[in-house]
Length: 588
Image (cartoon, rainbow, N blue to C red; front, side, top):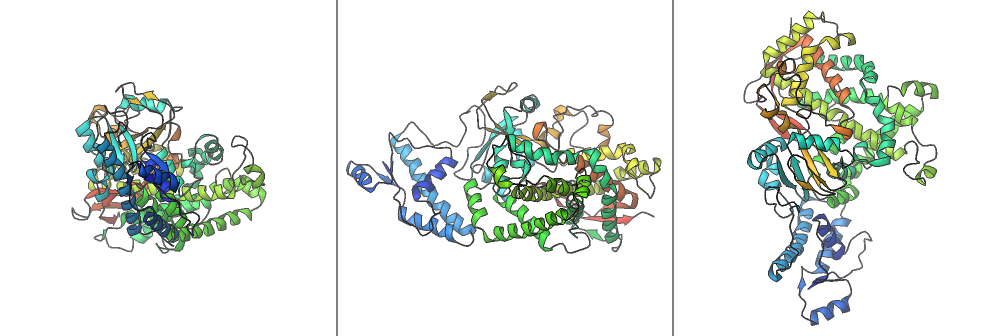
């Protein structure tokens, strides 16, 4: 049989021929063509000779598909309809390959499942994997999917996200093994490829020596000892939010709490990290730069389950993405120039607490010379690297914390007794109207509330790792291979009754004072664990504690009713509350 892939001279030199495109698809499927059975050629005489010998040509017209691909790659933007048309053509080709395999009973079968066939899982569908069966594309959240499949298959099962295959690991002993063996289980390739297509130099996407070089610049700034200097800034921003709320009556139901939390945290992080006022609390919610950041988040959400080559094509050819990138670069370069205008002495002093000062201070003086060095020899960051880090930190710096704050407000509105205990703690510790940083350590019950919010409704759905070598999980005995991806579902462990003495389905902050004070460390790790855990977790906890303490000094959240305050999951970049509607009453 011949996989007919004739070359064509196309106007766009970047346009692939049908062979390259098909091989790209097969690569995404982790498939290869058995050339003992198939003749793969671009040579027309060889192709004709094979036909004369009785070989069968499969697939649709190479010229026709080439033209479709050419059109998609020269369009000013890639629309959903065009992507679907291209996929339909690819599906036709690969389906013919599959059918020919079946007809000729070839030994090499096309199977999207891993070689580890003993691990159960849903049979995947072509291109979609398990996205349709699980309801993920229809709004079912990942924690809900993980819970349902765990109940059906047990602690370990396979799951196919489009073309991405993963093992979901819910056994705590196996999880501990994964985090202990960091040299085998590195940062998940899925996250690296997804985020890296848009922000190739962001810390989360990096590995090895390049990750160490970037981490040396950024990680020291996110330790608690260096973030407490931002206390007054967080208080001032929260005061602005309270002033906005004072313009409403006590009976008004606020149904845009998620957006208000995002605006608050975006302004806070812009000031903390970059000394830049994004004006999201009192200003427009849709100013140019903040709208650009939201567009970037939407792009990640919409493309999370697409094949990576489609995402790379989108990043290159989407006019919307190019506009957003240009807008972001314009604002970020403005921040960099603002910092460069500071004196060297001022910047040297501020880089101990300011991310932008530290990033600018790390700029390479000779990028061309540094580029010629090996990764292990490079020093500092290029402008392109600084730009990606700034954009990545801006998005990551507010999204998770704002989601946790929105969940906090929703859960507090449902549990007035918890609010009263927080207020009582504030009074007992003489934290009346004036809150100072020295008060924070004494607010033990508030710490428990924050932990319980993160346990009961973790913003992140899981953490992923990719194997760098073959390994066998010690408890389950499952054999994994180099390149396999594993996902550890945070919400499943946080609600697994095997690891909690108090019913984990209850929202009960007191558990962290008594029965569950010494819980298993891998039953609750909302910011990940191991060497790739979230570097901003100390800042996130600090922000949450300061904001909630300030809010509880002044207001009480009321339940807006079952129609508007039902909670539920909204699967986005984080797991947001779907329905939040609360009243806000200022205390006398």
